[in-house]
Image (cartoon, rainbow, N blue to C red; front, side):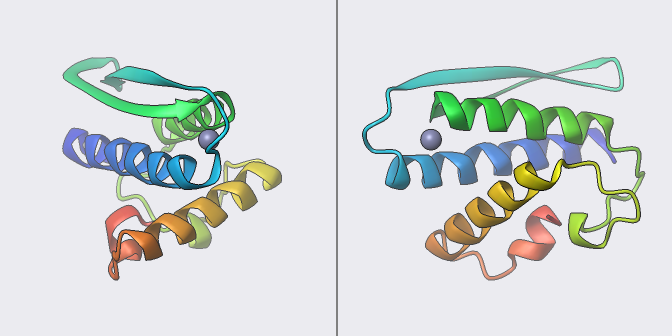
Length: 116
Ligand SMILES: [Zn+2]
């Protein structure tokens, strides 16, 4: 995917995870997280920041890593991907979060936005 697309995807992930974490993990300690984006060896000079609990941070780093390793030039919807790269449990966890935050944020075109 293009650098712009990569930035957009990671930013969207950060936003969706934060929305879910804010509502569902009220009692967890949260911290600010910033990831400097590199893609295909190039520094994109773009930092994605968000606020998450420990569990969600781990998930964020995992999904970021999966995106980094996504080999598709034009990323298909993960649901339709011929080579799904998520572990099953992580996938279920993410699908739940994307659905929750997608509805909450009122993003009708969520599928087009993230292609998750
Ligand atoms: Zn959380």
